[in-house]
Length: 245
Image 1 (tube, rainbow, N blue to C red):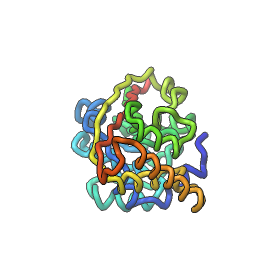
Image 2: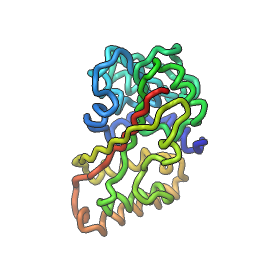
Image 3: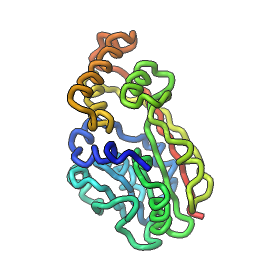
């Protein structure tokens, strides 16, 4: 079960999350939806970072997200998308009504068993579930060090938990695709991105200030980022594609 304090830290996020969080590469969406579908549902859609990639790949796109503030941003960007405030454990959709369910950067917050049952319920027979996570490139020392500030228990960035992604009830074994990519980001936006991460949002003011100071120190000390106002940030998107059994 996810840490609910950290999970709820996103409920009041919105514009900053959308501005500073990374998007997803087109190749990741292609891995989940290689062909056009009738209906795609993005679960835990946030501000629509991945939802936007579904729009040209489905006749109907539905976004389900527990934070109304997140959905306000999504609706402004993607007015053609049908939106619902809702949770993975109780999806506001009818049985066998969706061809594809996607979950980008959110499945680790779900209560696994009831969420899988709900996803399986709304999917058509043989429907697709795509789980996606962005994480740091293990070859990028400074981003990996910053990731450990936010997630001390992780060694290679915010990768999917193997216990979550190996086998899911009601689904066949997943197909795994890894998509490397990079983005150009300013130092200021990079720091601001970390301020949208759950551990920063949930921290006390003093702890958050200490964490930011440590990020600044890492960037000042690493030869690839020291003195730079902007830098190339390598990333990896892990994609797990499941078929409803």
